[in-house]
Image 1 (cartoon, rainbow, N blue to C red):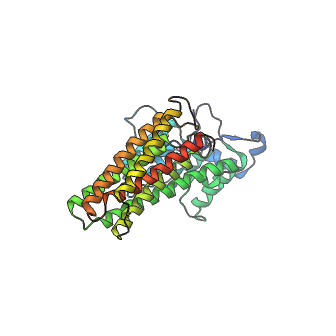
Image 2 (cartoon, one colour):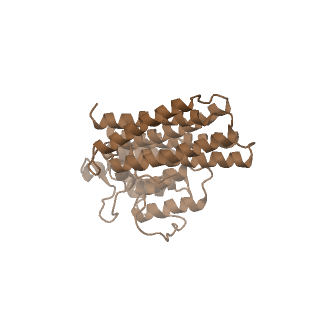
Image 3 (tube, rainbow, N blue to C red):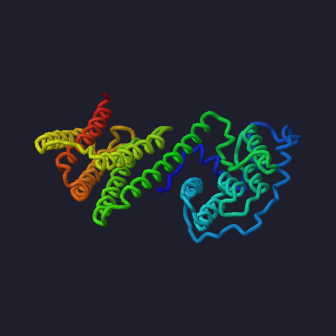
Length: 347
């Protein structure tokens, strides 16, 4: 999976910056003298000196890393190896990502579980009073076997906006699961195919992923709070369509377009694309963060995808007319370009 930077609010929960500059417990919203009599506050103080029972993994990497993205990507990797979790731990330790360290020690991913140490990291996450109290009490219940794990930093968020950001993370996890299920379904389907047919599917799959990523990178607006969710939706829609096409072809439900019908669609798409390129500025934003140059790159990725699909169809489904497959994909691309052009025109 591709490493993804999560929204700023979630990043603030997962990483608090310089540990030396942060107060402990790192709570805001009430003066310390009001909180010192609270059970959860005293629990933070009791675990303040807790240390790992085993040395934290060293890191040979340098530069920036996103501990939260590494954590969730590794969590969603079947049979993730210890080396992958060590990489998560090393990144989290290097960047003071207390939320990730809390989850690692609470859940025992790549480390010996230590609920006290997990609590120390929970108390180091900059949080409002109610959120920190809830998180510390949650860990206490898990430690006392009154509540099952696993523990997630998003379990105890308080604000509506932060809940929305955590919802986006869970949605990403769900879609990652769907991606793996989709890949497993196609792999099972092709298990009895010839080597040539399997190679054709592999080439088409890579081209589909390449095109889907271009749609995410260049034809999806990155501005706004829902940007990441929209990108995931765009990618999932492309890959779901690809998988559905293969299943339809296997069931004998291939598209039936004549060469003349394909030629008409091709002419329409070419005219729309040329008009789009002439009318839109090359550098300035015309639709949020989307640029004409990015659409041009995506169009090239789409052409490669169409070619790969046609080759795969010729290998596995020789009775399926190439014109039908080309026409099906061209009609979909016309719809995408039309939507972009209408949005840019304010329609």
